Structure formats: structure tokens, C-alpha cells
Length: 141
Figure 1: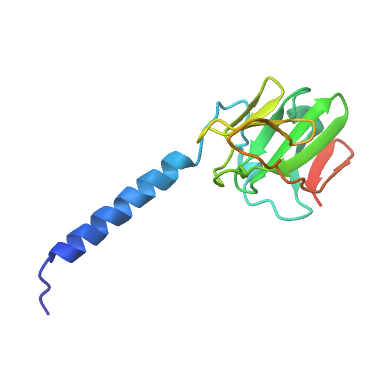
Figure 2: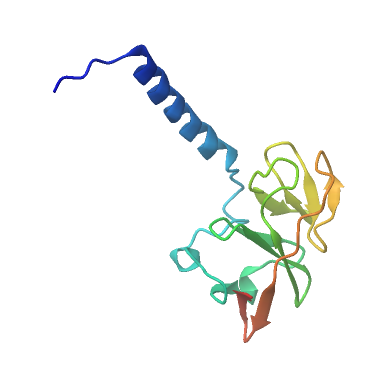
């Protein structure tokens, strides 16, 4: 059976490739200090260990891309977790620095202490996520 390449097939293939590149580019990409990339963090399920408490900087946080969660430590020994999906256009946040969780797509910034909006265009805070902190480990609840 012989197939001819049609204009439709070329356009569909080109569109799919472009969409894949666009999706990868929109995923954000902060510096290595603010996102979790270690193999131990991949595929964490509810109840699974995200990180050690010492891995989360005071006044900052870490983004767990696979789990779509950001864990912060606003004050020493106080840990919070929020959705890592920006409430403006559902981009994955890209970094945590200077007391804010930052979205690379349109510049929205959220407080590490409560997920509230510091800078728009987002108008809604990041939703809180449930974690447990026990024995030096942070786990998804």
C-alpha cells in the first residue's frame, strides 16, 4: 500500500511539532536552585517524600515540577505548600526568589508565606496544598 504525502499531513505534522516545542517552552525554567530535579523527587505520590526540610531555603522555596507543587519556608521551621500552577494562565511557576514565587509566562508573583498575589496579571492566590513535616522530611499529604 502506497501513501502520498498530502498538504494536510504536512500541516498536521508541522503543527504538532510546533505545539510540542511551545509546550516545552511554556513550562518555565527557573534556575537550578529553585526547582527539584533529582531522581528521588520524580513521580512522588500522595504520602511520598518530596524533600528534606534542609532542602528548602528559609525565605524561599523549591518547585516540584512533576507534582506541580511548590514548598516554601517563609520563616525558619515553618513550611507551606502551594499549587505550582499560576492562577493567571495555568503556566508552571518557574522560580522562587526574594520572598516570591515567580511565573515566567506573564510576570505574576506570589508571596512565599501565603501564596497571595504580589504582582499581576494574576488576581487569585496560589491554592494551598497539603503537606506533612515529620522527622526532617516533607511529604505530600
